[in-house]
Length: 93
Image (cartoon, rainbow, N blue to C red):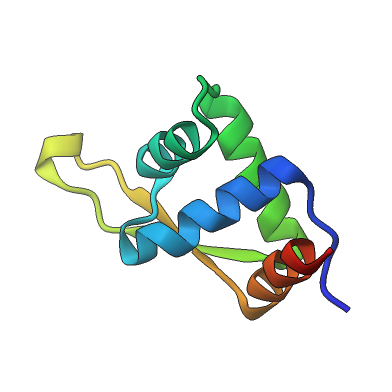
């Protein structure tokens, strides 16, 4: 059985699916705000991403830093098979 996820976690996972390989913090935040049609704090999104990783519903990787970001790395997220199952289970519930 897949991990049980809440409404906000569902919105973040859907954002990961929709963004594909471009799913990083700010893009995820913007996608979630668009989908929910309300302001969302960046902290809420980052905390949810960490929680989804802990549950095994998402994975992250660091990309090399770029000059435009002052050499800082960007963390990209992808949903796991367990995350997709959790979304499907939530949809059918």
